[in-house]
Amino acid sequence: MDIILLGPPGAGKGTQAQRLQAKRGMIQLSTGDMLREAVAKGTPVGLKAKAVMAAGELVSDAIVSALIGERLDTAAAHGAIFDGFPRTHHQAEALEVLLGERGRKLDHVIELVVDEDELVKRIIGRFTCAACGAPYHDQFHMPKVEGTCDACGGHEFKRRPDDNEQTVRTRMAEYRAKTAPILPYYESKGLVRRVDGMQSVEQVATAIDAILDS
Image (cartoon, rainbow, N blue to C red; front, side):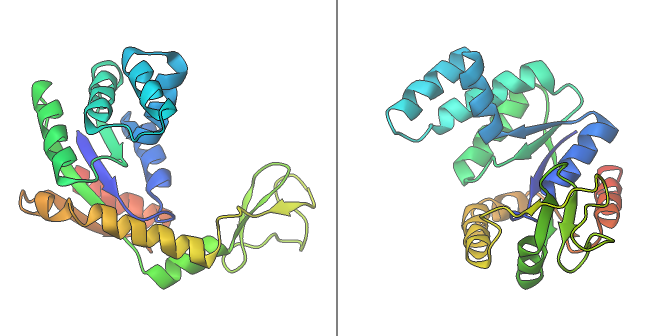
């Protein structure tokens, strides 16, 4: 089964993708991660991408498509979760060709729908233990003893510098701009399903399972 998982930063795509990989053996295909990996390994596509990036240019759709094709051939026998691709109508058509050449098709496009103001609260309240990485939140999950990590007893905590309201809203605006072109394309094919991303992780997971098993 091949799916696209859509949603703005902080909507929970990464958490749900990890769960699908563990439960169903699917592979998350994140174009950013794949580019870095291909460049590091020096694959034919990676070498092309490295040359383009070294020249300060954007990696072309053709290179990204070749990268995805390479990965589909080697690592996605149990299905793929596409993350960050496609972002344009042209890329959506290219993905259809890539899958078709391998006797596959896109099964679902699942969008995690979130309330922007609530998502901002969710993201800017996040912090972690500096020692072990245990996650906390100003509103939803404070340490049981103030200033002490529940998991390791550490006393230092940290926040991501980009977890601030202005950055979060900018990232959400970018998401809307990038996904707006492809949603009508997939809606016309009857592939788009929406899940309330403001539910708990387990409720979102249950809703996604219901879609995949339908």
